[in-house]
Length: 148
Image 1 (spheres, rainbow, N blue to C red):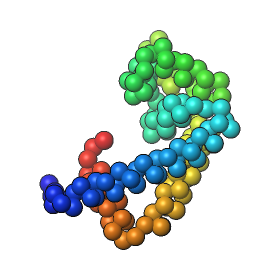
Image 2 (cartoon, rainbow, N blue to C red):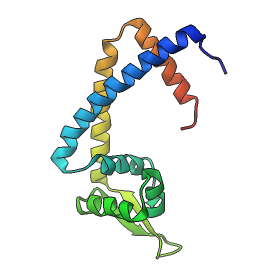
Image 3 (cartoon, rainbow, N blue to C red):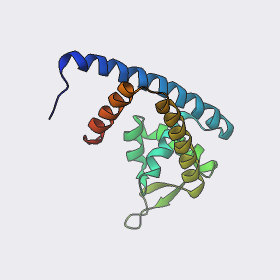
Image 4 (cartoon, rainbow, N blue to C red):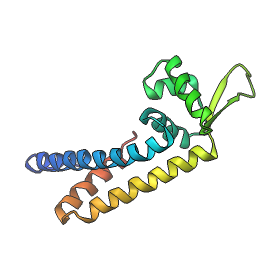
């Protein structure tokens, strides 16, 4: 694995940290206004984002991914189900096993928010100088090369 020379590494790391902090704040503010309209919390939205990349998750899977108890995960799912963003289905092999999957309405919300985040990031990146863009590009390649 190629490493960045020590003297440039801290500068790049600091630049990347500033970029993450700035874009995270900007994205969170945009998420906040959007999610407030739909009365959805950040944890509920993050759960929808997880579900959008999976066919389904069990309650245990949700609890583990969210770092919550199964009871807390059930509460998140209950609220999202009432808003028609997710649905519970029984496993074919064991009807006692409950699986949660995202609905079309939930998928559309996540897609809309991803577009807004991408637009926000694009705006930020368009204002970067070449050195800043190189730092972000290098970090992106490093992240893409790891299994997260």
